[in-house]
Each structure stands twice: as C-alpha cells, then as structure tokens.
Image (cartoon, rainbow, N blue to C red; front, side, top):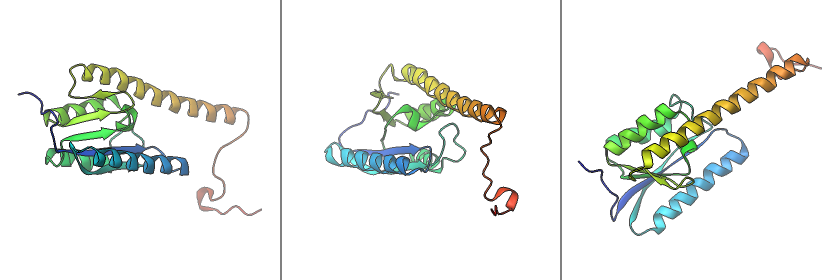
Length: 175
C-alpha cells in the first residue's frame, strides 16, 4: 500500500520543542508557534489542525514529552495528515525514539516535514537521511552533556563548586 501523499485540504499540525524555560527559549517557542500557524493558515491547500509542543523538556527521551505523546495518540486517531517541525533535533534527539515514531507516522500515512533540513518523510531518500541526521543530533546532545559534566569536574578540582547553597538540604543561608 502506497503512503498517503498530502492533498488539498491536508490537515496539518506543527510540533515545537524547546529544551529550557529560559526567556530566550520561551521567545523561540512562541515564535515557532506563530510562524508555523501563519504558514499553514496562509496556504490554501492546508488546514491548520493545531500545535503540539513541549516546553522546557529535553529531546533525549520521550518520558516527559507529554505534547509529543499526545501528538502520537492523535496520529493514531487520524486527527491530522501532516506535521511541520523546525528541525530533526526539535523532533527528538534520540535516534531510536525518533525513528520508531517516524516509521509509525509513515505507516499511518502522515508526512513529517523538517524545515531546517528540507526533508519530508514521504520522500524516497528521507529515512536514510533522517537516520544520519538523527544520529548526529543525538551525538551533539551527548557531547554537550559530556562538556557540561567535564566543566563541573574541572571546577570541583579547582576548589570551586556550583551547588545551590541558598536552600541546601532544606536550610536557609543566612549571612
């Protein structure tokens, strides 16, 4: 059975994720949401079907990504035909989770379009390219994590600590 190719009136949603709750990331979350909603609504071939998102949640696991999990449940219920997302790293930073999700979406006939990379999952070469780029995204996330851990270790070796001492172990810091 051939995958469903988006047609006129394609119900399209967007998926947005930012990994921290900083003001800068909150601005990015809002900007992505407005951008994709406007893009979808301005295209007469598309029907805006909503936005899913996870704010302040890492993409290395599906565990706390409630917006993503709801999107996948709604995909199973055929509530939309296509997903727009900024990039592969916003969709997820775990290769296995991403590929399992993308394969399931493809089985359901749902196209996922990654704008930064210019990839659409209904393209023939899309999965191989997604595998390669997802692997790079996961490796980047692991590298960032290792760099942060190394920086903490170096500071400890130099006698500098980075521990929140204002309410450490339930005690208030006074003077």
